[in-house]
Image (cartoon, rainbow, N blue to C red; front, side, top):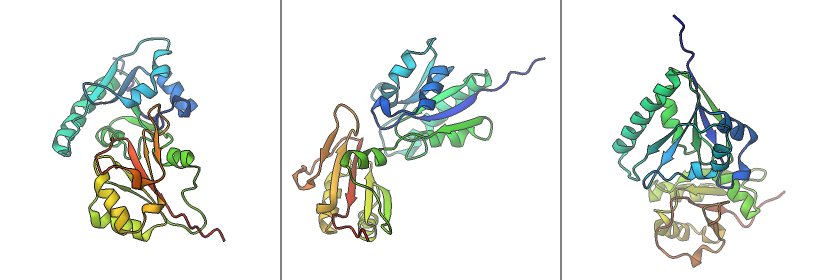
Length: 242
């Protein structure tokens, strides 16, 4: 009896938003995929799929898609159930010998949902990762500001951390990128003020997308919640270049 060769599970970074920032390898794998998967929110809407739309729709055949509905909740129980369900659907395709490409905004292993599926599948299947340009690097490019020079220190932190953790990070590093900043924006603005880093801070939303917004003077920002795809990039204005 012939044994079916199992498919490969690919985590493919599609970059921050501009489709032209996708790598050639990402485009090729999407073009050749047997199944496409991605996180879907708000009834299945997917930023990653939107970025990769041209690569998907220009493929020679229409392939099945697995949209993973992800509840926008801090309750990890709900998220883990969604990952469990998605992993089982992906297993079925892999067991049939199909290659599954999971699309990820930015880079698959940088604050990426792919990591949770990788945990569930890597022991049983061949898995590969195609890196993508992260929002950290695309933000630096948009600002025309290097993230680090010479002996400068650099940290990346989630806006979901405690006030104390964020404050200590801002005080102890020259450059700090605060991810997932939208829901915590009012609190983060207060922490920037308290640590004396307001003048160093830049705020970006939807970087490299049509609705991109860059605020270099964060004192003009309202103390209201911002979108999920937003970051603070805090870079010391006075830099030692010697």
